[in-house]
Image (cartoon, rainbow, N blue to C red):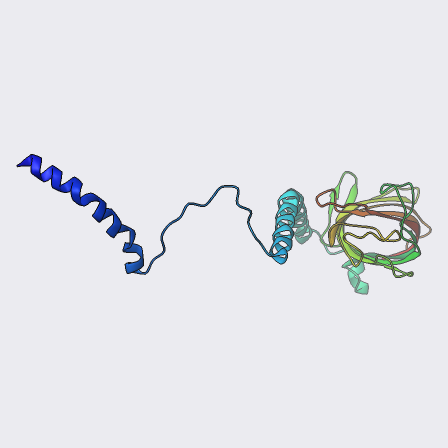
Length: 251
């Protein structure tokens, strides 16, 4: 009896397999198929561009997360420190939040400095505000926030920027500023034009170095060097350097 049952099962197996093959069509679903390895994927160019942009943005956020954290800690410390400090004397004239205002003329895209080569021209008209709070002392100097703008007179790259400055003022009247921050510009990101810089990213790292002399309690003159680039987080990264003279009024 067992022998006859096995013979009947093997006899009906091909018919049952054929019925299973049409089952997906009866249920309204699609038959699963293996994807042939190595088949090229067709994708719209716009999707590729957005994918590259999002990948670059994610990389930028990842690479600068440490810097953002450091800046946040510095500003938080400054706020908590300034909250316990006595009101400065300048409160009487309403300028307690201002440390200095500086303005000047800078040569644009200077050759043979940090960026190496020059492609753009003209001069930059620069103006900057340095705030007195929040601020805190560091290495015999003072750290304060700043904002500013440099407008190119020839229609090349202009920028607005902000960050923090460390200032060391000496008894001789000489002062030194070192800083770090970010700049947003209207220049080219990637171009083949010989008279334009390819800066790679719309937001750039900014590093200023300034040395000057206090003529009196309120009046100052200084030489400012300013470098912006994307710090090789994005390609290309030609960078821009400016160098020039500024006048400052200290409150």
